[in-house]
Image (cartoon, rainbow, N blue to C red; front, side):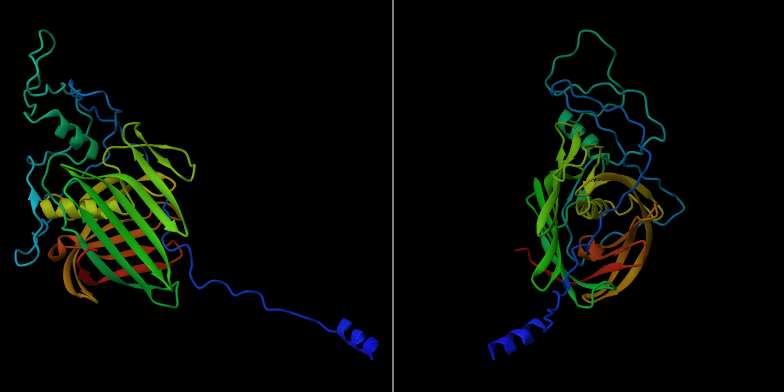
Length: 351
């Protein structure tokens, strides 16, 4: 009898189903590679009373079309961020100007020899001038959005289920912290940015991209480059550099402070850092657009970063004056047509 059982067992076939693939994809927001020519360096005045700092190259420029209508100011009936008044904007030169004279800090003695100071040299202190050059934005008016949490409804052709998304923005007037979270079923992808606030906007110090583990970019301003935890090569830190998340909030602050600064059809080039590299992106102020969103209707200004290489992403975001020029819609489209579309659903106090 035992011999019969052994014969039957040896002739049986045992199979187990392989584990199912995970429902959540780790590739929710892919990095973009852009190969653009490096702009020519612009001489930067160096304060005589400050230690030498690494020279940076200004890469932010705005081409303004006078025939285009200016953007409308935010409604006074809605939440109005407090603007920080700065000197009037100056037109950026088409060609690099002649080297400027160093600015003498207040209280320093008159030099006994040397060329006279430039006639148009401002009387402001050297530190704000250095930060202005570092930000690459030039004099202007900015208005930081108040701390807030925005929740979004996410639409995508890549996932058969609903994703949740929210943007948390906090600052204390001298530093900021931003976080964009998207996920489902207890798993999430988080983009984070933190840094300092200068007279002309955001100065990122660290950008993180996390799903299970995190990779990060570090803005090492004292050394003049951006380093990466993924051990990819360092990239020279250009003037006005932002990251994948801070770039939207920087545009929010600039347009809130001076809506007419970048009229329709303006083009702006900015170095944008991701978790593994940094490239120069070209943005266009495309149009004004009224949106019907889950949270209500909103008049917006649309900015676009168009792809320039075969596998680049199309990056679009809409800023709403009635929400302190914060992004009420974000859409990323892959080269194959896959997309993630985040639409504003509600506004909450930060926590």
